[in-house]
Length: 452
Image 1 (cartoon, one colour):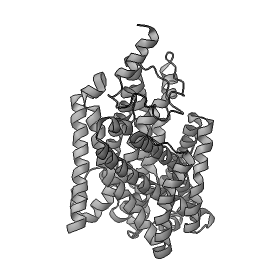
Image 2 (cartoon, rainbow, N blue to C red):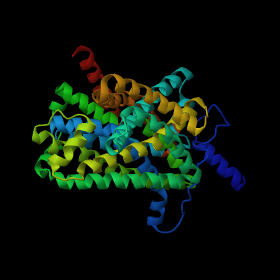
Image 3 (cartoon, helix red, strand yellow):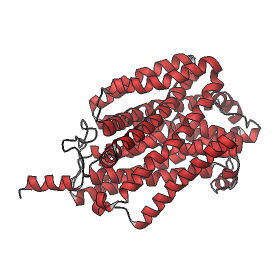
Image 4 (tube, rainbow, N blue to C red):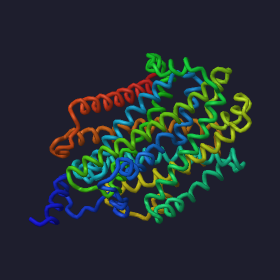
């Protein structure tokens, strides 16, 4: 057997038993385009793999998080910090599993589902994922529109319509190369983290109260209002479409498609996503801590809207620039989320349906479906309606989580599909426990909503 034939055989060995031999790789235009040094210092190799983790971390600190974190901090103080921490730990494991799936099999999660399940099941999974992406896009539209209103005085409806133009931002960045796209995302993440670091310093929250908030309380489950916000936090933190996205973009690295090369790639990709998600934990916790310190302790527990938070932050914190930093971080968050939601939409559509449409058309389609309810609700109910819609969108995301988590866990625990890259028994048990927790919380929320 020639070296070429051996390499081809190894590549086929890591793929699922696909029904279509001519399947193209995930995101073929950027697949294996980022060079990876196969020798040299560990720092050079780590830097080569840095990027995908920060792109998926964007979804964990998008405008939807702001609404749920602000509402949670204002109403319940530091209590829901435990939910943020636990959901972030769940996200770290799930994203590591997603990266493992993509690297070990050469298939993204959507392609893996299409190869494994029947067409009716795949259509149901695709529909659920599309709902999640639209809900996520809904949060981005509202968040970006609010930021434009706060910074430049643009009406909410006008700001929502302006967000339709962001399709061209992705096109511009993708045309320059995937590394440029990652650099853009990381730069905006630095802006967001810096803005909140300044606000935390100005708020000077009590350390003991913060540490106490990271200890889970039974009240989170027994109090329906608290559970509703907690489910919103989980939905805003563990993003369903991020599992599809991560399994794809880790394949942009030109690692060796051998067992040793894949094992090395999994290690660096896991480090990348873990470090990036710790940044997301800081940002999410910072939003809730600032809300708790500024609003809950001052008797403004009814603050649930981003606009209200903007108006009250500077006078309550005694820092004139606090409100402006808040709005700048919100705008950066909305712009960043735009990029990742677009890519996730493309991956899901191509993976489940093998349907390819231009990026700008996909972006405008998804964004249009998100703009319509925003314009409608804003016109009838005003800013209060958009705030409620923002929290609701995150609960919808949470309800879609099982449709992504269960297939992912099923695949990575299946030795027939993963071979030597099957997760250990302990990780498999922990993964199924997380999936069960998500299901139980969803069922309880549905039951309380219908009968409570």
